[in-house]
Image 1 (cartoon, helix red, strand yellow):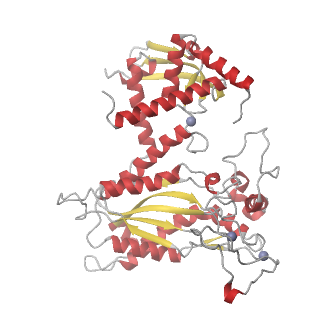
Image 2: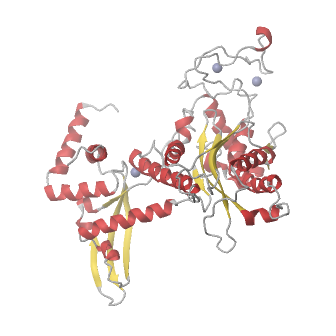
Image 3: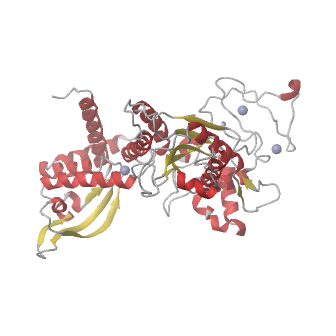
Length: 489
Ligand SMILES: [Zn+2]
Ligand SMILES: [Zn+2]
Ligand SMILES: [Zn+2]
């Protein structure tokens, strides 16, 4: 951002004003820290009191009126790196714990204690489910030619007169990468509908995996494993993250684990039976991916009518070791804070707030991305697509799901991690004699916190505050980094 001398002076003035009162600054900086140095915190105004349910007594009361500016700053908690890096970093760390937790759980059946989790462990694989082709696109190929002319150098063109070859050597950052060679030949509607149905395609894939497990399993207890019986013997748990390709379609990275089932305790985590190894899980995933399909709404004669996975399915075994848990979790967590706009150049990170100009409507988006967003809008108006609510998903090119999700029994949930963090914060506040701390007073008495809050604004009150928050965030990270390296006393 270019700042004029006048603006710089104003920002400096704001920064000086912030530190003018030592006590006020200390309180404000404490708020910024508790909000995790969020770059656009929510400003809450209101009050809360703690009531002892036994005595009816108000034990503590708190009002934001006593805070700097009369507001309490709360983290925006946005997952997206492009929107709020500190909140995204926290989300990424949570995602890491969720993914790694599931990998480690695969090894909890390790009975012989050799630590490698092979005996009595649950098989675990990392699988990448890809989208099919919706027409030839420009590609970065490590310095090689994008798309050579086929058939002894004969240069073919499509019915629209466009070249079906490209001799450029694209850099990965080239905006053309992912764009169709001919935007009119490409099945853009099919691609948008595919994105819109990838969640349903995955849901059905899981059902097909159970069917495939039944079909591929050996006889157990003297009889074949039927589709009905397979869920009494095996359970598939997974965590997945969606990754947007430059061409604007979703791929799914899935950590899938095969567990056993204890009929007396369905919640228990049981290692898979010895006959259900990583080969069986791999074969079942491949079989399921090849068979499953979802019928798409009919939009026109030339659009794909059925959604299937692409032919590239990569399934690799993962060992339930600390090293593999860290490696795989890191690999998946990095996708968890990405937005479509990080992969598809030219897309804004999110829908603009009401009242602001939508750059996509105003022709601010170029080339194939504009064609794709226009396709989403066109489909949104069709009666056959009404239930998909595509108008809300223009910015994700039709994708309607969560970037990160998991099956119930895979591992720690995000909610559990948030609870842990809240408990920790309450403990911190207790030391500061804040009303919420009474939750953790530990005398057995029931207490409720009665609050009355409203959102007073979003972001910092001025650029000076925002710059201070960035400085504090940087210092905080450096201090943590130094602590990790053992540089502090
Ligand atoms: Zn934030
Ligand atoms: Zn090209
Ligand atoms: Zn064409």
